[in-house]
Length: 108
Image 1 (cartoon, rainbow, N blue to C red):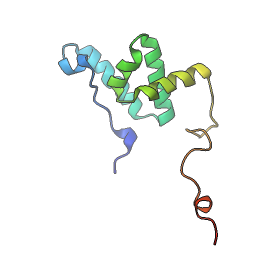
Image 2: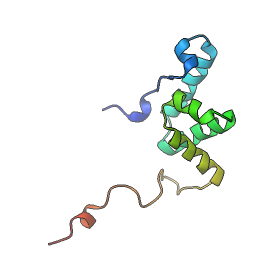
Image 3: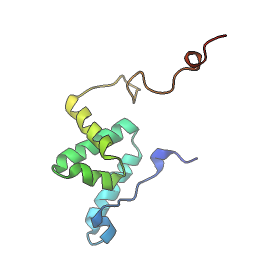
């Protein structure tokens, strides 16, 4: 199975679909190439930063360009605004994920 981060998303914004502005399409392709090499937290933060720079309509545009959900981009914006650092080497906050097997199946 291919690594999910190595797949570069094809932009689905109206400008790229029309093909009328190749410089905009190249910019969107560059954004997606950078995102393909990032982990999920940095992808969220980068998309949130770009959406914030864009201003009104930025979240919707970045959702079309990157294929990320609007809530993911909004979460990236919130994380940037809050400046919440994680422990080095950790992408997610502690406590999430699948429950430990010992916890799920108590000993008989």
